[in-house]
Length: 95
Image (cartoon, rainbow, N blue to C red; front, top):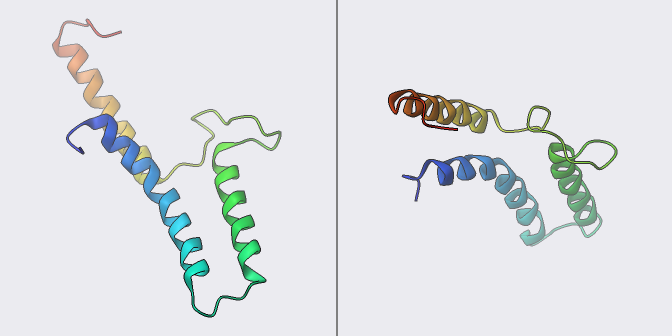
């Protein structure tokens, strides 16, 4: 699966978001979870995901201003460099 560069990019994009969901999930699974903390955790999670992807007016952020994981950004740079190199090797047939 990670042999495909697109799937690898999606994996790197989703890792930090999945980690946030796992943290909130662990709060819900705790045997002595405070019922008052559960809605707060969900609200924090919602806010975190929302600020990554949306502007303050609820419109989608463009890719330059979206809050992305640094590992994902570096993987994108590597991927695009590889695509550019492939295009140069095939006499500029890429569009």
